[in-house]
Image (cartoon, rainbow, N blue to C red):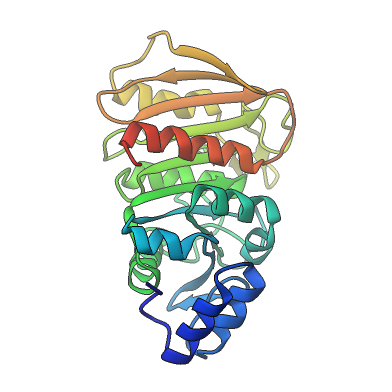
Length: 288
């Protein structure tokens, strides 16, 4: 089975390409001038995203398995195009058999509630992205992980706070709430897997002031306190584990999970950390 949005000529090219490479897929998609994929953006009314489909898509379609997706939000002034070109992210998606979706922020920024500028209603926009992915590519909205780095990590935290059910799970990296932190979130605790470097000086664990004292990144531990307090877990000892270069603490609400993993590096992102979050989420959700 091929994606329903492709015209007959593009369908033939799609099958012939066999999804052997991103270049082959791009060539197949380009046979239909109204489609998008790989380095061709999918354009919506208020923004755009890029998508890399797994090389095993034909087998996934044939088996009838739902197609999941990992979303990635770039850092400040970043470009989603660079993320979809990243070979590590592509390889991760191919090996997991999921779509990799890189979303573009307006002018390279994200409009979370305490951001210096608000240029878009991000909740509305991400709902539109999810619907478009379902319509165009058949992505299962219930098999999604939202990850973001730095400023994209801030946005990930706020989307989880607004509606934890919008995505199945959340994997922010080096970014939490900003001051003033929300007192609570109007939703159940998310499946949240946070990674942060203890030597990060761009987004330190304790946060830092920006704009000459106008804005302040929030403290990561205090950001977790919002969820712990709301879930009745304040003062409770976490489960601990070491996983490679990550030292993790995990709290277990009635629903969801709250996990903080630290490494001894600086401001960085690794595909392996996102993959780990997907694999833990899949196990918790019972995905095959």
